[in-house]
Structures are given as C-alpha cells and as structure tokens.
Amino acid sequence: MHKVWVADDDNAIRIILDESLSSSGFDVKTFSTGDDVVTQLKIEEPDLILTDVQMPGMLGYDLLKHINDNHENIPVIIMTAFTDMQAAIDSYGGGAFEYIPKPFDLDEATQIINRALEKKPATKGLKTKPTTDIIGESASMQNVFRAIGKLSNTNATVLVQGESGTGKELIAKSLHKNSPRNDMPFIALNMADIPKELVESELFGHEKGAFTGAVDKRIGRFEQANGGTLFLDEIGDMPLDSQTRLLRVLSNKEFYRVGGDKPIKVDVRIIAATHQNLNNLVSQKSFREDLFYRLNVIKIDVPPLRDRKEDIGALTKYFLKNHSDSLDEELRVLSPEVVGIIAGYDWPGNVRQLENTCYWLALMTPTQNVKVQDLPSEIKDYEAEETVSDSWEESFNSWVKNIASSVDKDLMGITNKKLDKIIIRAALEKTNGRKNEAAILLGLGRNTLTKKIKDLGI
Image (cartoon, rainbow, N blue to C red; front, side, top):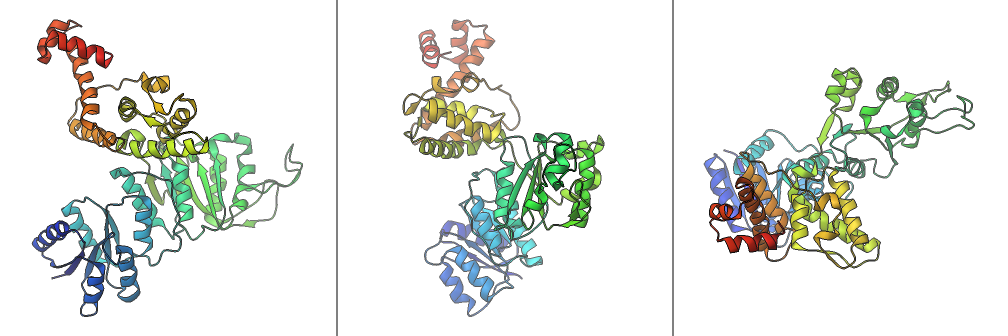
C-alpha cells in the first residue's frame, strides 16, 4: 500500500482527501503545516507528498525545495488556489511532478497521484523566476500555464496555435523567459508581413550585391537570434521554397546567406505560431509535411476570448489600470450596464481587441465613470444570439462569475436587469409586440411591463 502524505492548513481539504484517497487504497497521513511534514520526514518517508502552497510557517514551495534537496526520490504534487502562470512555473520549475489548481476533481487528483507513483519528477530547480503579463483563471488557460510551466528550462521546439489577438507572441516570450536562453536574444518575425521575395533575406541575411538593392551585407534573423529564440509568427504564410530552406536549417543547424558561399552555424530555438490549421495546409500541399512535424514537437492551443469569458473581468481591470496610468488619467470605473455588455460580447478580435477597447475608454471617456454611450459602437450595438443548448447552464454560470469578478456590489441587480431584458424581448417577439399578450405570458401587469420596457430601453 502506497503511503501518501497531505499537507494543507484547511481542515476540510484534509478530511476530504483523507477519505477519498483512503477509499482508493492509499495509506494516508495528513498535516496542517509544512513544518510538521519536515519533522515527520526525519522519522519516515512516504511514497508521495501532496501539498498546498499557502500554509502557516513553511510555504508549499519551500517544502518542495526541502524535499528536492533532502528526499529527491519523493514525488511532490502542488495544490494551489493561485491559478496564474507563475504558480505553474514555480511548481514545475521547482521540481513538482504536477500542479493542481483548486478546486479540483478528486478522481483527477487520484489519477495524477497514480501517475506520479509510476515515475519520478523530470526537472529539478528553477533557474529563472520572471514576472508575466498573461492573465487567466479559466480552465483552458490553466492548460496553457501548465504547458509553459512544464517547458520551463527546456529548449523544446513549440508550435503555438490560436486565433489572431489571443496573445501567441506573449506566450512565446514567456517560453523564452523561462528557458535556459532567457539572457540571449528573442527575435520575432511575422511571416505574413514580409513580401515573398524578401523572406529568405529576412531569415538568412544576404551578402553585398546578392541582388538589386543589396548595397550592403545584411545579418538575418537567424544570426540575430543565435544562442536565443527565433519566434516565427504566422508560419502558415511562409512560401514553400522558404519552408525547404528552413527545414534544412532545423536539420543541419547551418545556412548560407543569400548570395553567400560560406556556411554559417547557428544555435537557435524555434517557436512558431499560426492562426491557421496547419494539418489542412499540409493536405492542400501548401505546407510541407516534414516541416510541420519538425515544428509540431509540442503544441500549445491558445483559447479565443469567447471561450474564456470568466477571464474578461480581470483582463479589463488590468488593461484599464495600465492605460490609465500610461495616459496619466484617472482610473476609469465601469457602470454595471457596461460590465454586463463587456461580459456578453464575443470579442472577435480576442484579447487584443479588449485591450484596444480599454485604451479607447481610458483616452476617450469624458468622465471617470464609463457609461454605455461611451463604448465603441460595434460593442454597445452588439446583440449576442441567444441559443439554447445542453451547456446553457455552464455558459450562464461563466457569465455570472465574470460579472461577479468585475463588481463589488449589486450582483443580483445587474444580472436580473440583463435577464429581464432577454426574457421580455422573447415574450414580445412571440406575441409580435402585443404588450397585453406579452404581459399575460410573463405573468406581469400591463403597467408593470410598460415600465420595465421603458427602464430597460427595449
């Protein structure tokens, strides 16, 4: 029977994990502090330790370091309610087998424990501890943070896939900052911005006189990134001829400048990104299959903002604060109506569009208080299509959580107002605008319905 220790200052968590893991066949021992674990480790060793981060006395990360320094054969799983990217980096970079955001599924936690007991942690010791501007508490962003954390201190080739505006370059920079190359250059190149005939010159440089207009020797992006990271954004737009040369460089780690006759050796980590489906491009013969497999060593899928709406509130606060400070303006305060509109909008331009909107509000709003009329027209005039599906409760739950994260009071009033608007419109649509029939359908008096229609601006 495997011995599993649980360290958490929350008595309820200890009880739940004790009961669940014991019923799964583990010999469980619980502790309320990291110091108690260290004391017990002088007497015996478990097969695995599951620890919280925030505890009185010794923190979970300090306990993790102590275990790695003195009991390196014990796998450690970190539990934390602080679900940002830094938590993932600190956990994986510090040698944890896995990091589990709270609240977590008990069955999933048991599966992770079983996996940890089958193999040892892959890395020890965090080399860098940078800050990050990537924000997100949604489940989909937790997967992104996990990937970045697990890739810390590695040189693995990574393909970042996601819609325009989702923050692919920000993720590439985070991968670079958390790699052994963090003190070397990070060079970014967007393939979609370069004329086809200049791609190879941009990537590999050229010799003087190599072509018309080449009046001087030029150092290409590969040489500029030597020892560091080259980020190739929108890799799907790279011409086929250039794909062949790129594949050769990735295979041989050398290239020739355009017009050159001497091979140039480079040591460059490649991070590529695209908003396109490279599998489809391969099928269409517009992207080399061998290059695809060379780039697609590790893939990170970045979710669109419409699929992580619970992060909109935190992102909005962050961008408004940043832009208000940079413009030396008062911090803008969103009205409850604006919060509801921003939460319900689909953000086709993703995080970039949200940031640009926050800049607009910080710059253009005439007063500190942002009202509906202050929003850009494409947002304030937007009406989301109301669809009914099996997951409507989940979507509604995410919407309410997002509003709750953005306001300090009157959550019920804000959500009720939005719901009233949706329900009354549905009733009026069914009755072809006949208020008497709509009032009966809604169970309201005619005068009450008329007043609500006026108050809600329907």
